[in-house]
Each structure stands twice: as structure tokens, then as C-alpha cells.
Image (cartoon, rainbow, N blue to C red; front, side, top):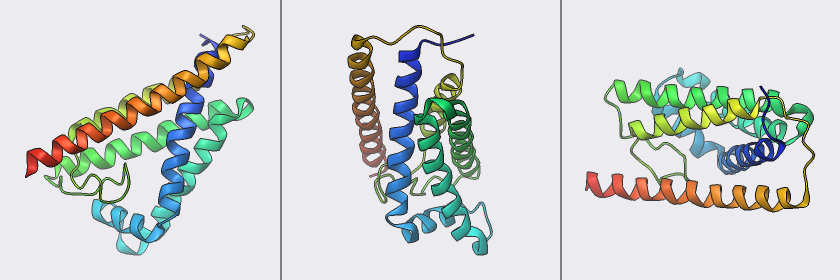
Length: 176
């Protein structure tokens, strides 16, 4: 099975934007991100720093690899692994009854409560990442594809940020 090259570019650039911006955001305040990693209680305290750096490196590497056609499949698989790890970390803490954790998703301190919809979101993104790993059909891109790709990535980013912000505000209102 192959996917259309425009769809491949939309998925790849969207994943690259999501993971790249997340990685840079964390890289700008590694100490704060380390405290978020600690809040999940998944690694021993001595490994929190290396785990935080590993997550940042994986996000940034996946963002770069998925954005380049020659390495897109490897980047998409790495992105899927990162997203599954996030979903598992969220689900494990929710099963433990620990939902008052800063997820670090939209900026530190923006979502200090995790929820099952975040698990579902990450699993949905995982499916899209795996789709981006598929081989691309031989159809040549045309000028209109550029507009479609750019518009789709922009609209996708706006919708993602809007939905995430609304969910965060809703959670904050429900816990008040």
C-alpha cells in the first residue's frame, strides 16, 4: 500500500512541526522539563535528567527525520514510538489515580491535570505517524499540491492548538 505524496508531506510536516516545537520548548527549559519527568514517577530520581534529555533528543530527531523524504519512514516510526511512550506514561499514571501532573504539552504549567483524552490523542497521533511511514505513490506533485500541503499543515496546527487549549480550559473549569 502507498499513500499520496501530498498526504505524506502533510503528515510529515505536521509531525515535524509538532515534535520539533515540543522538543525546542523542552530544550529551552530542561530543568523544568526534568521536574515534569519526575512528576510521572516512572524512572528512578538518578535517571530523571538523562530521561528528560532522551525525550528531547527523540522528539527533535524524529522531527528532522520525518521531514526529509529519504528518512521519513524512520522518523515516522520514531515519532510513533515517542507518542506511544507518552500515551503509556499518561495511562499508567491515570490508572494509579495520579491525574494532577503537568503534562508539559502546551507549555509548562498550562495543563496541570492529565486525562484519558490525552491518551486517546497520542494514540491517534501514533496512527497518523505510522501512516506517514508508508511508501509514497509515484504521482508527481503539482503546484496546487504546495497550496494544499501548506494550508493543511497550517489548519491542522491551528485546530490542534485550539482543541488542546479548549480541553485544558474545560479541565481547569471542572476542577475549580
